[in-house]
Every structure is written in C-alpha cells, then in structure tokens.
Image (cartoon, rainbow, N blue to C red; front, side):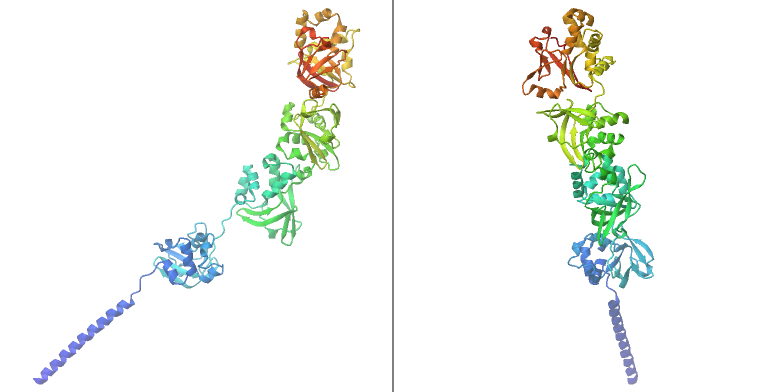
Length: 622
C-alpha cells in the first residue's frame, strides 16, 4: 500500500512536470512567433531617407514631389547615390538651385513596381512625359548608367533600384524661329522673319537648316550703312533676299563641320541666275567667320538645325554692288521702288553703280512718279530718256548748283533751276526735297515730281492741245497764229516761236478767254475780231503781247519780282505789263485790257523744248 502510494505520487509529479514543460514550450513558442513578424514597409520617400539617399531625398522635398511619391503608386525609382549627384556638383544643400529639378526627378520614376528580374531591354516611359528611358536588362543599365546594389529595395508603394549616375532627360530643343524669338539680341531678326509667313513656317518645321543669325546691333549697323532708320524702310523684296542669304538648307553645319575657305550655298538664288549665292567660311583656331562677319556664339542647337550668331548682316553680291553708290538710297528704300524698277528695266544699273564714275542723281519718289502721271513704267525706249534726264555726269552738291534761271545739263538735255526762299525747284514744277545724300560715286538729291523732258516746242504743244479730243485749250490761239502766218503783211509768229534756238515764255489765252473777248468786242468769231481790230497786223501785235523772251517758270516769279509784290515785264510787242506775285497780269501799258478784269495765270509751267507755256484766262490787249 505504501509502495503503491509512492508510485502514484511519482506519476502525479511527472504529469505536473510535463504540464509545466508544455506550458513553458508554448510560452517560448509564442514569444518566438512575435519576434519573427516583419515590421510594416515604409513608403519610397522614407526608404530613401533611411537608405542614405540624402541628396535624392532633399531633391524630392525641394521639388515638392515627396508627397507624390508617398502616394499609392506603385512606382519604380532609379535612385542616384549621393556620390552620383556630387559628380555633378549637386548636394543636399544646393539641390534646390538645380534648373529643371522636377523634370530631372520625374525622369527617374517609372509607373509600376518593376523588380530587376522583370526588366526588359527597350524603352520605358517615365513620369516625365517628354522623355523615355533606355533599359538594357542584360547588363542592368538605364541610359547606360549601371544599376548597382542595393537594388530591388522594397517600399510600401514600389521598388527602389540604386544607380551610379544621375539620369538627365534629353533637352527638348526649340526650333530656329523660337530660338530667335527667345533671344533678346535677335529681336530685329525675328521682326524681319515675321514679315514672311512662309519663311517662318519653313524655319519652324522639321528639317535640317543652318542659320547665320545677325544680332540687333548688326542690323542697326547695316541700316546706317544704307542710309535707312528702320527695318520697315527696306523694300520687302530686298529684305527677303538678305534673309535668305543667311540660311543654308539640307544640313545642320556645326562649327566643327566648318573649314577655312569653305564655300556654302544658301537658299538665295543669284540675281539673274539659277545657282545659289554662297557664303565663305573662315576658320582661324577657335574663331569662325562668315564673309568676314564674326561668329560670336556658335552651335546653338535647334530641333531643326543649328544657329550661329554673327556680328554683321551678310549682304548678297548683288546688293553689295549697290552699297555706297548713287543707286543705294533708292534701292534700299521702299519709297523709291518705282525708280529702282525703272533703272533696272532701262538697263542703267551697271552704269550708275560704276565706282569709277561720278554722278548727280535727282531721285523721284514713288509719289513723284504719280505726280507726273506715270502710274506704270513706259517702254524701255521711252523710259531711258526720262531717267537720263535725272542724271548729271558729275557730282554737284546743293551749294554748287548754278544760279536761278540757269540751265543744268543732264545726260538727256537741259533742265532749268529756280532757287528762291522756298527752296530749289526744277522746271517750275519739281521741288528738291532732300539734298546731298553723299555716295562713293556721286551725290543724290530727292525730288517730289518726276522730270519729263520736253519733246515739242511751244507751237507744237499749242497745236497738239488744239487737236485734243478732250480739254482743248488753245484752238482759237492756234487759229489766230495760223491766220497771222498766212497773212504776208503780218509778222510770222509761228516760225519765230518754232525756233529751237530761241527761248520764250508764252502766256497762252484759253479758248474761253478768246470767247470772252469776242463778246466784249461785239463780234461772233475770230474773223469778226480781225475786222473790228483793224487787221491781222493788229492781231499779230496782240499775240506778241503774250510772249516774253527767256524762260520764266512759276517758281522764278519771286526772283523776277526781286522782293517786290510785282514786276514790269516787256513782251515781244514792246510796251509793258505787270506780273504780280498772285499770278495776275495787270497794267498793260498802264491801261487795263479794255476795262476787263485782270488776266490770271490758271495753268503753269508747260515745258517746251524752246521755252515754257502758262495758261491765262484773259486775252492781254495793249
């Protein structure tokens, strides 16, 4: 019994020991399970901070991207080491100063959690919408930059791969026109281009171009050379030629591609030829020139070529031949485009740009051609004598012009000067409005009315006017002259006034003036007047009262008057009458014309080969 109890107690103790041991094992087991549970994963930003990507973490904060990369994702981040950033002189302290920081950081992020084993060779889009990455899965590189350990670093919202360089997104290049518009020193070039929408379209589109871009200072210098003040002064046809001379099509020629003495064809076609105008390259060490203009900034890369900024405007050979000649003021000013076209059409350009010659050119503006009634260019045969009438074969500046009333010999006959307090005038109708534009081969004076050389004498002009179908003014005057000529006893005025060696001023009464005289004399026609006046000899004398020896243009009247309000004039018939500053004729032999009103000059300065005609509204009677 005692032994049985001992055995039972021993079994109870063993059982209790087993229970206690089982509890201890369970307890230890429970404790061991708690220690093996992994902590929750941190997001990409926190992993970067904890992993020692200090510059990257600072950059994310500086670019305000840290909150984005704490988002749901998932993302794959290619994380440069601090040393990789340092190679670019970027640290956590200065990263906020990096240009385009956000674009650079987004170029390191790909959507989705991509482990190293899932990488495939090819391009992959980044969160920088404008740029993709090039992945080499075999060599574990991104854009040629190696993926190094640690890689496949997990975060709650993605994967981090460490790389030993900074990924820089490809530069998004501007086109050539945008480069010009964004450069504060190329504003004139931009303004010039915008005048030609097709050029803007071409240089903004895909292609391969080389553009030599003159600075604003270069354009200002050119304007000064050609005597203009604004780009708008230049004819658009000329400006376009100059611009095209700065463009090479079909190649983007960087400075390294250029060689000394190289000649490059531009898009400008040579004047009168089919070949391209060329520019000549100069290379001296690191210095590059184009036609002698210095390249001040080379290799401005564009999406459609390259721009080289130069310090002078390139002038095509044709335009260069005109610079500093008497043609220059007209050729480079749009207000003289008619004159320029006329000179070219008449074949006089080569003559007027001869640097060995000397000329004086009286240059009419476009308005001056219209004022002379020339709205379109006449035939070459008619145009040449008109243009030659504007040119002297020597240099004569304003101070050297001869005295008023003098004949000035041109390449096509004489014109006549009037100089008074109002300025310098030619043939009574043309004013000299700008003088002494000095050029290497002469001088240019600007005039406000084109000069038309006379082709008929005073009689021929009167006869032509009497035969005109409209606006006939001198029918009765010619009839009177003809009647006198046919009378053997009367002076032959037609013969006298047809003398090309003579010089006359004719004050020609209109038909209306003769009709008024008929009424005053109480006759019906010229025959009645002849009878009433006492014969054709008297009529001849009356007609001679309308003719003065020498040329008196309307612009000569202030000189004839010599400072007075009127002057006594002696006609061919003898006697006198008074020419007044208000263009009236009075005091004929101190007696007014049969009591009629004063005669008034109503039309002036009809140029003849042997004088000048003024139209008057009364017949002058002695």
